[in-house]
Length: 119
Image (cartoon, rainbow, N blue to C red):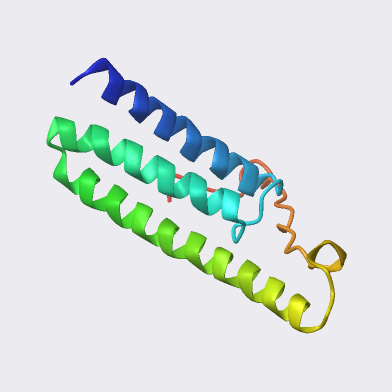
């Protein structure tokens, strides 16, 4: 496997983990374009590494992960375009539109002993 593909795999893995941490910490909403784009990038990059290694279950999983992310990004972009069209039809400049943001719900850590991994 080439060093370039390996490096892309690491970028994909770090991107996936950072996105997960940001959503878990409430810094990104699960419906945000940033989170979904991070899923696309991580799925594609880690899928490339898996393909170059011949690990086909991982290739399929990462490909599906990326396709779901592409669909989510497209949905986010369509919603933004629709809001801009609605604002233009109402005669409001896009800079003046108050677009509500969907805030991620804060996630409280579980107290020790709540999750029994042995069960």
